[in-house]
Amino acid sequence: MTHRAMNFNAGPAGLPLEALEETREALLDLDHTGIGVLEHSHRGAAYERVHQEAQGHLRALLGLDEAWSVLLLQGGASQVFATLPMNFLKPGQRALYAVTGGWGEKALEEAQRLGDAVDVTPMAKQYRRIPAAAEHRVEAGAAYLHFTSNNTLEGTQYDAFPTGGGAPVVCDMSSDILWRPTDLSGLSMVYAGAQKNIGPSGLVVVLVRRDWLAEARRDIATIFRFATHDANGSLYNTPNTFAVYLTRCILRNLLRDGGLAEAERRNRAKAARLYSALDAEAGFYTLPVERPHRSAMNVVWRLGSPELDARFVKEAEREGMFGLKGHRSTGGIRASLYNAVTLGDVEALAQFVTAFARRNG
Ligand SMILES: *Cc1c(COP(=O)(O)O)cnc(C)c1O
Image (cartoon, rainbow, N blue to C red; front, top):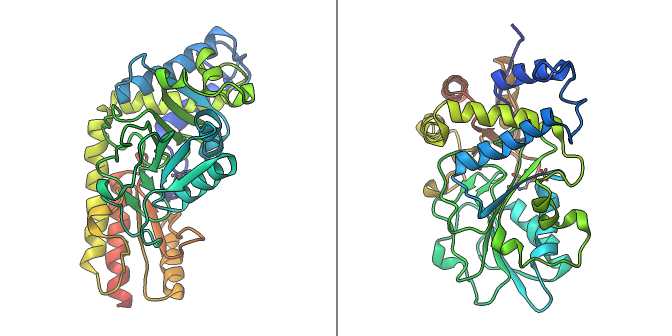
């Protein structure tokens, strides 16, 4: 069998082997058509079925009816940082941003290029916590409130979502979409770059309420209007057919294997195992995030010095564990425990965490 390392990368991240193997076959021959998935027309029946199945699986997993548009777009989450205000921030309006981490900072910066946008969560910018609902200073009449459900860099995660005080609420769910059953009824739009917790890069999922879409600006480039893609079933222009195919396989297997309830059970067990190994060696490892706000997806910690951090990463690699180096902006160690990471991989990492502390503490 192909050698597969234990992969704790933050994104692009590890992908489920079964879906990769199926995609390897489809690369040469999609569904016995004699044409590979990369070679099919996006206007043909073979690809269209894949495309619609991917959208349907997202609807099934998240319980979305036809009031929601399910878009499969290119450009990534960073592009949505710009297209969100292009579509929904009108002159004379103000957009609210709950900035709880580095990605939220970038989202706010893009909105400020286009119009009036402010941070409504004044908090210490080491980002060790998630503000309480009442700390979000929402104001009446805002264009929308934007927040990041899981801070990929800092390792913090919302439990209950904030409310917009009447304004539509938009969530960047790039690093924790599909980690558990999620009630989206309080939100008007959700977006997620696929390469964290869904599938491959080159695809961004945008879920948006059609009634809000009807209010969006029309005076922007056609390609950047979410309404364009809604009207064309995300086939206005050529989509990333390969990424959609792989995503279709991953989502179908997720549904088959118990859906998001089962994903949550596994994800909680993984996070609990790793955090408890780290907490048990609290004198040796430092966990910066306040306990109630710890992310189940991105676990961050540091050792006594950058040199010791580097040694941890290097020795972990010798044992087959990769992707543990913290983000360049934060340093330290980060283990990303997305849906595709197995409990077995986390068990191996937890045991290494314990052994490394005993050897070096
Ligand atoms: C990775 C990430 C992004 C950026 O995604 P791209 O697809 O690379 O643009 C934005 N927001 C969050 C929360 C992320 O984790």
